[in-house]
Amino acid sequence: MLKRRINLATAAAGAALVAVAVAGCGSNAQPIQVNLAASEVLAQAAQKTAEVTSYTVDAVVETAHPQESKGKVQGRMLYQSKPQLAADLTLDTLDMGGKGLPGGVRAVLQGDVVYVKVEALKELVGATKPWIKVSLSEMGGSGEVKQYLDQIQQFDLASVTKMVTASKDVKSVGTESVDGADTTHYSGTFPVDVAVQQLPADQREQASRNLAELKDVKFDIWVDSDGLPRKLALSGAKEGATLNATLFFKGFNEPVKIEAPPADQVGELPKGTTN
View 1 (cartoon, rainbow, N blue to C red):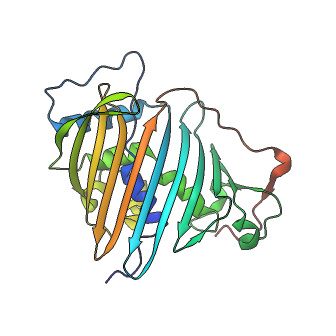
View 2: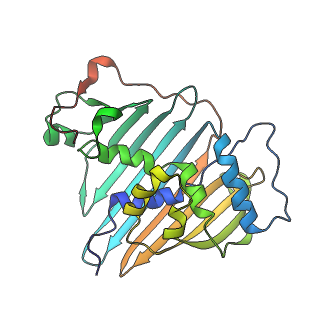
C-alpha cells in the first residue's frame, strides 16, 4: 500500500519526466535522418536540448488515488536561458483532493530571485501584497513558497528528454501532425530508477522523491523533422494510483518576454517561513 499519494509534486515531476526538452531550432538545425533507430532519435534530441535558449510549454497533469480524491494541474510556462535564466509559470488549475486555489498560481523566476503570486499565501505566511519576492539563496530546502517554485522545475524540458532516453523499448508508431508540424510518433516505456540516473547529480534526489511511487512509465513522444519534441504524453500507475500528463512545446528559440512584477506590488516573505 502506498505510504503517500501521487501528489502534485509527483504529477508535475512526472510531467517533468515528461519535459521533453526542446532543441536548437535555428537555421543550422539538421533534419534527423529517417533511417535512425528510434532510440537514436531520442538520443539525438537529448543532445540538442542543450542548445535551446527559449520555449513555451502547455501542460495538463492529472493524478488519482484509490483512497483519495483526484488531482489536476494545468498551466503554461515560458522559459529562457539567455541573457539570464528566467521563467514565467501560470497555473490556471491547481486542484488537489478537491481543494483548489482560487485565482490559480503565478510564479516568475529571474536569475536567483523568484516572485510568487497566490491568494493562499496571504493566509499561509501573512503576505500583505499580491506578490512575494524570495531569494533562492535564502529560501533553504523547504518553506511555503518552495512548493510553487518546484512547479517551475517540474516543467523543465531538458531534464525530461534525458529521462526518456532511458527507454529500451521505444519504437516508431507512425506519423502525425502536431500543432501544424509534421512529426514522427514514438512510443515506449522507461524505468524510473534508471531514468533518474540520466540527470545531473544535483537533480536526482528531487526527481527520485517526486517519482518514488512509480516504477515504469509509459510515454509517447512526437518529434519533428528538426529533432524537436512537439508533444509528450506520460502515464504511470502503481497499486491503483495513476498519473497522466500531456505537454505541448512550441516557440523554440523565439524571443520571450519575462518581466518582474511592479515594485509596488511586491512584498518580502515574512521571516520564519523560508525554512
